[in-house]
Image 1 (cartoon, rainbow, N blue to C red):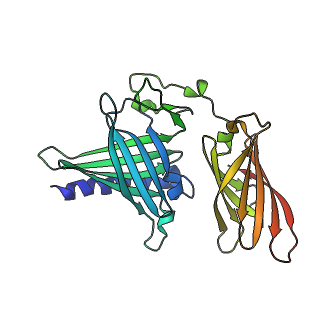
Image 2: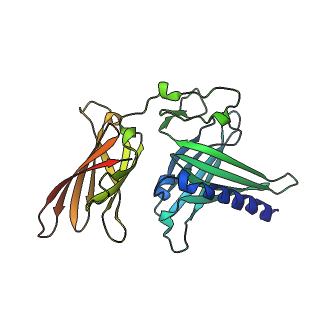
Image 3: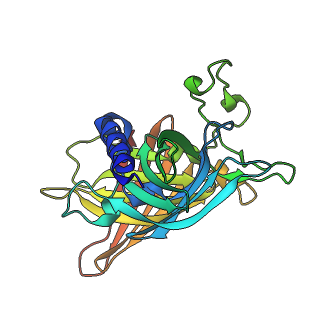
Length: 295
């Protein structure tokens, strides 16, 4: 078994990926940014077609599928190891994971990390016979999906960016014309307060997965901003009969031992307005503040 060759490939892949992290990876990425269902943007791939990253807190799992006929082959669920930027960092702050799949004839090491809104999975395979070891890198998109009984592959309900390099003999397809981004999708991302000197909320991060939304906030602190942590957010629609994905606003609540903070976030024309009421649990007066953010 040629373990040194396999691990040297993985190390090389990690170095290549790390070289572009400053410009490519999601801002303030952590394990929560990796969790979810991810579909290969190349529907004709002969490699990995889908991965699901699960778990909670510092515990992470990965389930992978490979291209097979007539239906994709399930590799199964395995534990994954978070990789942090420092030995002193908490595992939950890791922005990449490594998972190991071992069979009688090969060992596959999957190294997963974010690149913008996409997930990159580097697959280094060490064959235990006389076949040459291999390395492949795949790009995935996190999408709400449904499965048609007539098909074996998931169908995206949100737009997919198709990398033209994956389709050398065909033009890139603009799927935005078929499946437009919902109002709720427009809230997703990292938002920074337009007032760099604010004494209130400095930054927001919103994740949208279909109709499921969660938000994280940072408050002004010294020497570094205070993280409030993730909390579920409720879409606020114009009518009770409207779908949640039509919402331009969401409601998020952070309830701590000090105060209960209720925030309504509204997206309009590329800006995000946040109105937050703070009810203190001691003798301090309650507050209402409004902040404006941009991406």
